[in-house]
Image (cartoon, rainbow, N blue to C red; front, side, top):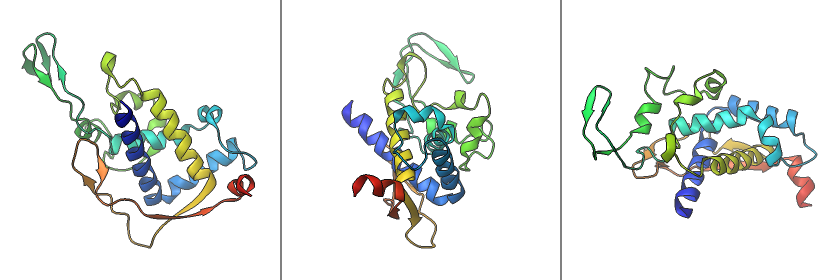
Length: 200
């Protein structure tokens, strides 16, 4: 449980930073939201998170495009059922391809584009299955969302981020149980005034 929770959160944070560095306008919108609702006199804390919906949407969109576990954990059908027109016998092991579902153009407009604002539309969040669904959904979802939101928010509030050079960030994925980046993210950062108040 510890490994599953920490590895998936770390992978999601690396993808989220990669996405906002690839889309600087998203980074600026998130920074503006934080400065408007939190300011520069103190560090963002957990109680601020409900006031930062765009930050949360960045994470949802990252989870949609780069689901940490692209294939869900195996499930077994307790009764015979029909899924997508296929008759599935009882005790069949089922794997859900969340990666494909999250990129399906029948379900998502501009399915392969990074657009956090899509989650402002009612009903979009209901289609996200990054943590699974129902009784067997990930029990750590609430903790993961809080930890990732707080960490990403602090990284945006406390540092100015830039790509290493003018080249596009390599967004290729490595195959495996966890969807990691093929090439680890490298970025430049500079401390912002808010952090200097707390480290001097």
